[in-house]
Length: 332
Image 1 (tube, rainbow, N blue to C red):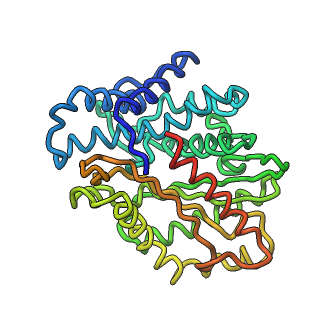
Image 2: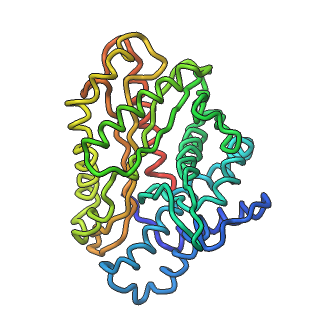
């Protein structure tokens, strides 16, 4: 994998703040995007003596910085290189400016308090809609995003992307909540796939895919608690192992409830894209320890594991997920 310098990451994040300014949007002070940029500045200032990587405060700086860089890299690439797509993402950028939890590499609370005032963070779920929309644009598709301020309440797909051959793909994107056990996460995964299939069935589209954000069900502290992984490949195995702990009870106990949905031809492909990002420390090939963003996307067949069934366009959906994942890994 390619390792990016902190300076390059900071440049992309700062460019995102510039875009807000160009559009007249005020970034939430010391939160969200601005907090991520400040984290990167602080990392840059302390590169000569970076401190103890096992210190949670040091780790938090790298997590915040890596999360905002990954998002900013996709947004900036679209905004600066594909100007005709700007209207598609502008409303989500306005929302992003005010969102507190912006990174896809850390779990977020649904509620918290600031100055003794309760704050709800449902808008954090909209960030992955922007992220996914940017991926589709970078893949050469024409994109429509569900308006984040006049939300359809789940009546419309979150992203509709028209391919160069005219095929309209609808993506229903769900973010799982933080729960206590893999078994509960598996139940929630099944329930969210059901809701997503209902959502895309109402859509004006040719084909569809369910996308599930796993960021809130990954145990990010556990992944960082073991110190530096010997390589990025081993770190990726650790992330995928956590996803596997959820997929096991999902396939054993929950997926059977999805069989009636996929027993008939459905707009939704029998493939769910599971997005799981985190930030961990790894040993680089040069034998340096470095905090690194691990970005996993698993295309899981439903309702059974393995290759998608014949007579579906599951393999086409898997190929599309693979193309989008390539952009996840390479646009930085």
